[in-house]
Image 1 (cartoon, helix red, strand yellow):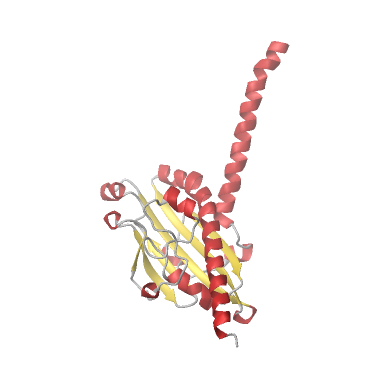
Image 2 (tube, one colour):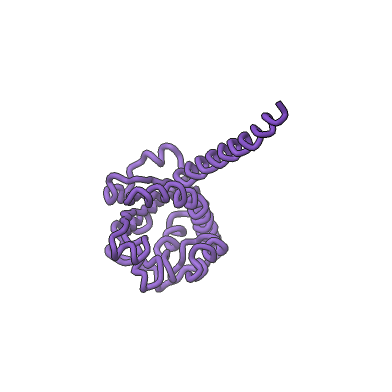
Amino acid sequence: MARSMSRRRPVRLVATALGCTTLLEATLIHLGRTYGSTVEERRRDLPGDDLVPRPTVVTNHAVTIDAPPECVWPWLVQMGWHRGGWYTARWVDRLLFPANWPSANRIIPDLQHIELGDFIPDGAPETQCGLIVEHLEPGSALVLHSTSHLPRAWRDRRLAELDWSWTFVLVPLDGGRRTRYLFRSRWVTGPWWLTLGGWLGVVPADFVMSRDMLRGVKERAEGLARERALDVAP
């Protein structure tokens, strides 16, 4: 009996570990798809939804910012590789994007003008990785679109494909004194192994990245609002 119980113990430990791992993965996938957003926001139609009409994955993230939209928009306009960055924590940048510069902590005047069709880089020039501005409502909505976020060799040899849209929307609150900042990604991938890897790896990682971006934009926009309030104070 004692030997039988001793043999069962490792099996139970493995089963418990697998169960905990599965639960953790499911939790991270849920957060990677929904962190900060409400059910209503996830159901809402947004500009750019038509770019990827049948997505494999849809993620929605949001945060309330104690600043008007005009203090949030400048940070979105200057996003990009070797531009304003993506406002994630520096340790995340060093880990995932070591060649990128730190995210900007100031408004960069030379990066404050974008137009439809502009290319927003998301990697070194030789990678040709980036996003195209597909929809633009200054102060309100920005939609980016990419089919280049895969290793260059994969794209050249057509080993895999990715079609990805990224929508950023600013909704005024309290008569424009505050802002609801939300962004959505919609993407479809192929073949199956890339889709599976996206669900198990990219979606959980998006929880960390998106949470950092929300916090980064919120802190910068609220700081800008305080600076402007001081500038107009009597």
